[in-house]
Length: 369
Ligand code: NDP
Figure 1 (cartoon, rainbow, N blue to C red):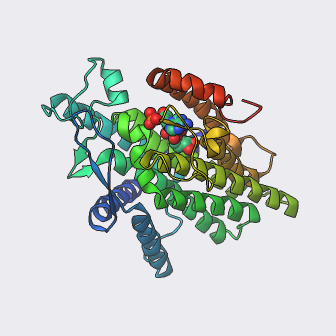
Figure 2: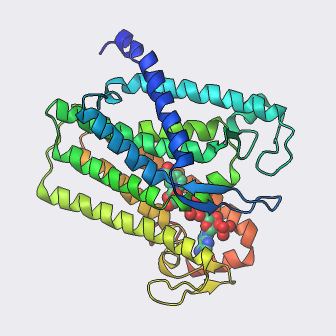
Figure 3: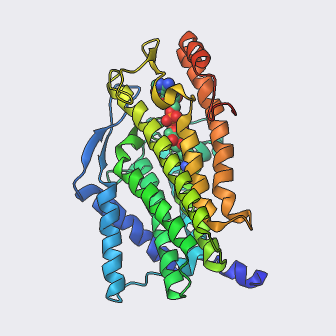
């Protein structure tokens, strides 16, 4: 592809605008009407709590079901996304810029004093646009932060499914593609199955809604986490049985560690006496869990996530570094994030944290880091 045609494939068309707006409209409507567990968010500074309707899994399954029926009846093209990958990328990017400029203006004008909507204005336009002004802005009653995270994760799956449809259409469906897709489907379904865990994450509780979050959710997650699928569309990889088995082992171990560690902490925060691996939990200072995965390394959940990320790339073989973009990015991000979290916890828990560090000296991977 020459430079001119590459650049022209980034130009947004009306079809990509309609696809994006159609997707958001669908999510806005089903998110408000489909049944789902109403989960209270963290306590805000003024003592109030937001409530999140966790119906992401049902919304996603309904959407996939509708698309499959639509595709089967020749009503929608299942390759619509994979045929327009680059223009959808630029359309979503432009949307993120526009929506965060609107959020900036609305935030600056707001007189709301509640903790979720009170404007935080530094006066620096770039800072305020990048990090956002309000914690939980809404549009037509929809919490935009929760909405955008959901849209990003679903968008990743929709891109992947469209890439599969494309590879079937081109008669190029390979073992590698099936393996990559299967791992991602399990990971994304699992994410929505445990969607209520999202309501207590740092992004949802503490970050204001600005370009950084909106871009991360809508552009970064769906378009960079799917690079392996795009790459496999135009590259053939032969995998031996041993390689497939090893790849599945990396995925299963990663999943068990990732989900197990996050679940143990979640259960512990809800009930500090909840059994861990069938035993009463060991706790430091009444606040920090030292049992289970949290007694092996201080961020075992990051290790699980890194193994999962690696398992998404291994189906692509080792002939190119391109499909390894996601695990490499995640490694850098999680090392940096672990350092920031460590500093925050040291500040918050003081001596208790120092004792936890002595009891569990490893940060992410025992005997290595
Ligand atoms: P964590 O789930 O690791 O939570 C860290 C917090 O947990 C600390 O600030 C502290 O908060 C509490 N905590 C730490 N140690 C203990 C302990 N021993 N006992 C009890 N509580 C403890 O944070 P993240 O939000 O960073 O990660 C959540 C998940 O999201 C991870 O699995 C991560 O891999 C994943 N993630 C994925 C990304 C991606 O791009 N794929 C990006 C970022 C995260 P408190 O003050 O509440 O006690």
